[in-house]
Length: 97
Image 1 (spheres, rainbow, N blue to C red):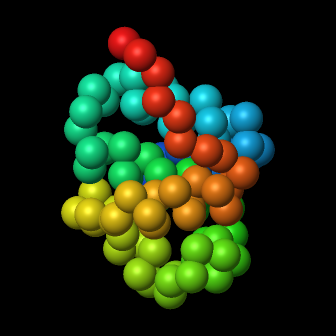
Image 2 (cartoon, rainbow, N blue to C red):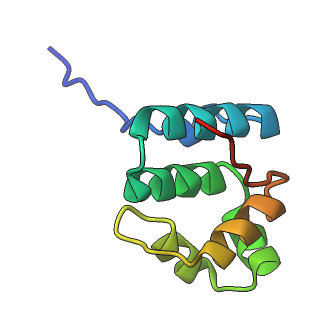
Image 3 (cartoon, rainbow, N blue to C red):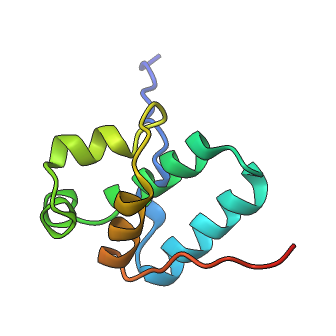
Protein backbone atom coordinates (compact mmCIF):
# COMPACT_ATOMS: atom_id res chain seq x y z
CA UNK A 1 0.00 0.00 0.00
CA UNK A 2 1.53 3.36 -1.02
CA UNK A 3 2.23 5.84 1.72
CA UNK A 4 -0.07 8.88 1.66
CA UNK A 5 1.45 12.32 1.88
CA UNK A 6 -0.35 15.48 2.77
CA UNK A 7 0.49 19.12 2.26
CA UNK A 8 0.04 21.52 5.14
CA UNK A 9 -3.13 23.57 4.63
CA UNK A 10 -2.36 27.21 3.88
CA UNK A 11 -5.30 29.61 3.68
CA UNK A 12 -3.06 32.10 1.85
CA UNK A 13 -3.43 29.94 -1.28
CA UNK A 14 -7.17 30.64 -1.29
CA UNK A 15 -6.88 34.43 -1.01
CA UNK A 16 -6.94 35.35 -4.68
CA UNK A 17 -7.92 39.03 -4.61
CA UNK A 18 -8.48 42.02 -2.35
CA UNK A 19 -12.09 41.02 -1.70
CA UNK A 20 -10.98 37.59 -0.44
CA UNK A 21 -8.34 39.21 1.78
CA UNK A 22 -10.77 41.74 3.24
CA UNK A 23 -13.37 39.05 3.93
CA UNK A 24 -10.80 36.77 5.56
CA UNK A 25 -9.42 39.53 7.79
CA UNK A 26 -12.92 40.64 8.81
CA UNK A 27 -13.87 37.05 9.69
CA UNK A 28 -10.73 36.68 11.81
CA UNK A 29 -11.44 39.95 13.61
CA UNK A 30 -15.06 38.94 14.21
CA UNK A 31 -14.08 35.52 15.58
CA UNK A 32 -10.92 36.39 17.52
CA UNK A 33 -12.36 39.14 19.68
CA UNK A 34 -9.46 41.25 20.80
CA UNK A 35 -6.69 38.65 20.41
CA UNK A 36 -4.01 40.79 18.80
CA UNK A 37 -1.68 37.88 18.00
CA UNK A 38 -4.40 36.08 16.02
CA UNK A 39 -5.21 39.24 14.06
CA UNK A 40 -1.51 39.93 13.44
CA UNK A 41 -1.02 36.35 12.22
CA UNK A 42 -4.02 36.71 9.89
CA UNK A 43 -2.53 39.89 8.44
CA UNK A 44 0.67 37.90 7.87
CA UNK A 45 -1.29 35.17 6.08
CA UNK A 46 -2.93 37.81 3.89
CA UNK A 47 0.48 39.36 3.19
CA UNK A 48 1.85 35.96 2.12
CA UNK A 49 -0.98 35.73 -0.39
CA UNK A 50 0.72 38.69 -2.07
CA UNK A 51 4.31 39.08 -3.14
CA UNK A 52 5.94 39.44 0.27
CA UNK A 53 9.13 41.00 -1.15
CA UNK A 54 7.18 43.70 -2.99
CA UNK A 55 4.97 44.33 0.04
CA UNK A 56 8.04 44.70 2.27
CA UNK A 57 9.50 47.28 -0.13
CA UNK A 58 6.23 49.23 -0.11
CA UNK A 59 6.10 49.14 3.70
CA UNK A 60 9.77 50.05 4.03
CA UNK A 61 11.10 47.10 6.00
CA UNK A 62 12.97 43.93 5.07
CA UNK A 63 11.07 40.86 3.93
CA UNK A 64 12.38 38.94 6.94
CA UNK A 65 11.35 41.79 9.24
CA UNK A 66 7.86 41.77 7.77
CA UNK A 67 7.56 38.00 8.23
CA UNK A 68 8.65 38.39 11.85
CA UNK A 69 6.38 41.35 12.57
CA UNK A 70 3.34 39.54 11.14
CA UNK A 71 3.96 36.20 12.82
CA UNK A 72 2.05 34.89 15.87
CA UNK A 73 4.92 36.11 18.04
CA UNK A 74 5.25 39.43 16.23
CA UNK A 75 4.25 42.69 17.79
CA UNK A 76 4.18 45.22 14.95
CA UNK A 77 3.61 48.88 15.64
CA UNK A 78 0.27 50.29 14.62
CA UNK A 79 2.14 52.31 11.98
CA UNK A 80 3.39 49.07 10.39
CA UNK A 81 -0.12 47.60 10.45
CA UNK A 82 -1.46 50.73 8.73
CA UNK A 83 1.32 50.64 6.11
CA UNK A 84 0.73 46.95 5.39
CA UNK A 85 -3.01 47.49 5.07
CA UNK A 86 -2.51 50.43 2.71
CA UNK A 87 0.03 48.53 0.59
CA UNK A 88 -2.53 45.71 0.30
CA UNK A 89 -5.26 48.10 -0.83
CA UNK A 90 -7.04 48.01 2.53
CA UNK A 91 -7.69 50.46 5.32
CA UNK A 92 -8.28 50.05 9.01
CA UNK A 93 -11.75 51.14 10.15
CA UNK A 94 -13.48 51.36 13.49
CA UNK A 95 -17.15 50.65 14.12
CA UNK A 96 -19.26 51.17 17.20
CA UNK A 97 -20.21 47.88 18.84
